[in-house]
Image (cartoon, rainbow over all chains, first blue to last red; front, side, top):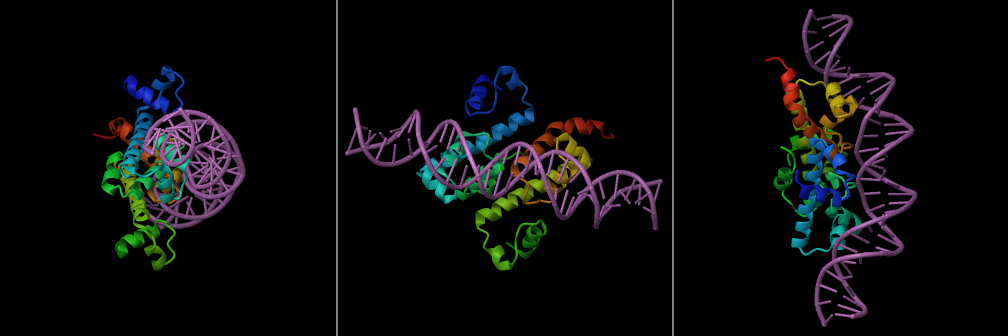
Length: 103
Length: 103
DNA sequence: TGAAAAAATGTCAATTTCGACATATATTCA
DNA sequence: TGAATATATGTCGAAATTGACATTTTTTCA
């Protein structure tokens, strides 16, 4: 794990007070966070490529603009379930989604 | 979607009162459920192949035997987050556990 | 067989995640 | 530029998910 990745995670709100604390993240915790960020980024790219605003997309999935923003920001208080449901709503293929999950 | 798959979903507790109701599941809802069942089955296979009891595995992931049973049963009230965390936990410690086993 | 171990099922209070709303900040473009 | 549009951030009560526990059912195997 390099410095860049660390900054990225910290910037997304994952409670990381210091480098020491950060280094205490177990491998599976790190993998879990990275998986969520991967889903977040994929979602944002897909929504943007479809020229949808967060507001319009929120309507599509019966949610709110603020929650979409949090999804795309990789907010820790957003579940994988919601991210996956959102990706499926954008007709992301099952195969693609599966590829983002652990094998 | 064939009859067999339908029975499988119904047996797992997904609220499906009638065929009509079942057929109203949107494609993304169906895909979401199937994805979760896939993770469930994968988890059960992995745990069993490692010769772990639900109780022992529950300890590994700081959860309970009953929750593990529900995960593996594809219970709707289990999140993908928990399933993924569990899968990651197994992968991480696979070598260690395997080393404790005969041959 | 039958007793012990494993797994399944039901319930519950605590915690987490939810949509919604208010509002601040950023981006777009005439 | 500046106003309109889009996105980000903080908070809240409601709803969903959690680990734990009790109990029942199933499986294992001597």
